[in-house]
Length: 85
Figure (cartoon, rainbow, N blue to C red):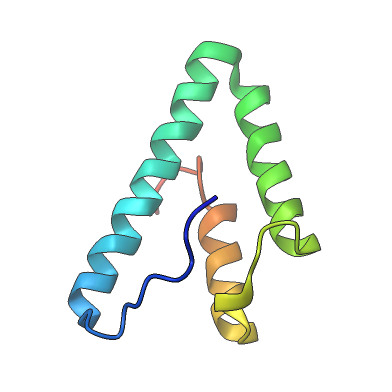
């Protein structure tokens, strides 16, 4: 589990955007890896289970107490594996 006690108050907005973009690229890599080793259906199942865990609170969302922030995270994960527009 990720240590959520990290203080990001000294992090500027540009760094946060870079970090979030990098994490999304890592998630996309994981989806492609799962698809190539276990099939596209497994990758889609991974994404569905991840979204279910987020929505059910199985993954601590204490940092995403605001609905707008939570919705943004969920929408980014839902977009994983889709062709870029």
